[in-house]
Image (cartoon, rainbow, N blue to C red):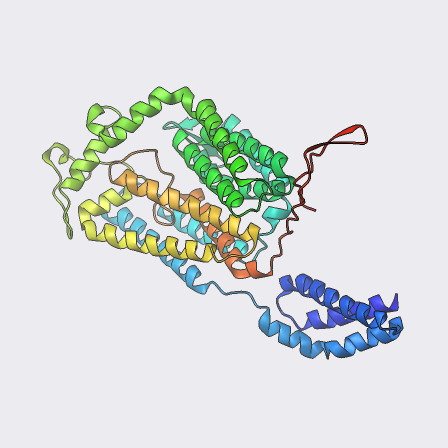
Length: 465
């Protein structure tokens, strides 16, 4: 039709003036809706279709001028401050690793870490300028790919120091614990795709929680599985609380409680004796001072002799070596610097991380779209859990072996994943305002009804239209 063609030409001319291509589709959709409504108004007044289209386009104005005005309005929100903050943390981490390499002569591959940082920055900007809505548009594919690759690697990965490691080449190896870093992001896609189906969707979501928790347990550790499970429950609980799942809140919370019980029984209860004993040692490592609590006791004794500024005194029992703890570039980095530089170093680093995390959460809670909020919240919870676990480990509360201290401690694949996750989060902050989630239309209907001598069970009772 001629009217459709003229409207299309007007939209195309407007969009040519807008430099940010990602906003073309929503702008064109909004223009078409407005022009169609206006044209229908003229048609209802008795104008012919040709006249209605002509009046509508005249009323809209010059498409070039309209496009230039929209170009000034629709621009991505630059996240330069968060990018600078992230790269600054990364540079601090590289400086620390360089210091360890030359000062302590600890055997670490500094070149590999630098190359990983450069590659990670590339991943961050790729995600930053990319389209985070892929997570919501292809959640099933992402879920299947992640699970399939994880199981495949688990089947061939040998254990090194109690952790399964996947070897690609001698240069590229990584612990499968890194998989637990991306599972929360995959899970947000599952929430997004199941939210339309009410109770059935919630049931499927909780099945995925059980499966992904077990996968995290097998590829990482029971501690990281617990962190993923807590993240998944938080994300689901927030979704129910905000009414994004068309279910009654109390029923939704009850389902989450039952899921939690199933996870505790199915995944954690089988190691209940080990977990209980481990938690006791975490709080009081002296219970097994020459076994599982050995490093916990050592860390607490070392920190007891640390100073606020400057090098502390290493107890005589550990004075035979330059520094008694192993892996100071990975698991015990903070402990090493507290002993050698003082508590001031720890306090400064703690403040820096606190600012980064608080800023991230503040921006997260400003997001308007459902998907954008979930994605950024998943990333922030993951970074927070990992940071807190690493700090607790270095203070002698050794709950579960940390993966890395994000952006600071040594770790190649983990570093790339962290930067990629931050890039996705910043992509949300950059463009969330143009994302339009499908609105849930809650239609209250009876789940079971009897009419005209027919029994009807409506499984779509709370499905979004």
